Length: 238
Image (cartoon, rainbow, N blue to C red; front, side, top):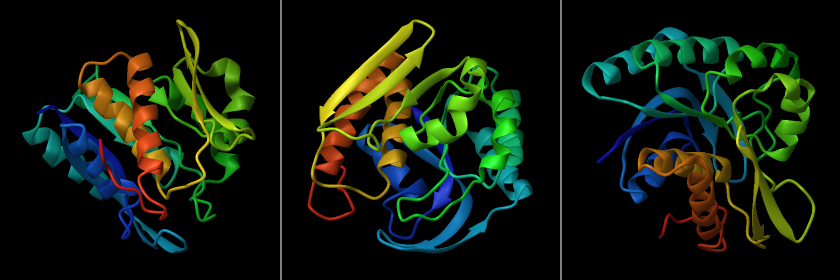
């Protein structure tokens, strides 16, 4: 099995974060490793607080995994600030200059808790080009990335779930052009869909799919995940 890595937080409900990512990876037949960036006190409907993992401990977790495993594909989720994100990306690039990094820039939880403040946005442009793909939702794109749109040289998947309309339109921007993936909007909603989508994309890339195909297949996967039941916690079924 291919080995992939999630650098993300711990959600006790397993709807988001590392445990959600690992479930996604396993269902794609890739082996998932995990590095914890935070411990949250939350469930699928409420968020109480977060305790951040310090940089030294994050890097120690990474170091011991890279000592043992050949890691070429990494998903980054919630992280305390852009300075720590920069340190983590620098570490990954030093270990593997060709590493594939998918960054899901989580600014606010689905329950409304704000993790990142907009005044960090000036640091973004220096980080983006070291990522293979970033996956902001439409609100995150509008608040953080649109003001520096001309500086973004990497691939971007703008998730369309926050836009109005009967259908959900995801927009993939690449050097080769702009591509759209449209799905009928489902009545159900799920906690942690952004985590599952970005992890699914990473797994598809690790399996050898190109970026377009990885995003299309991941879109199908998340559609099934959202429609898997009527609760806020989805089931990983193929």
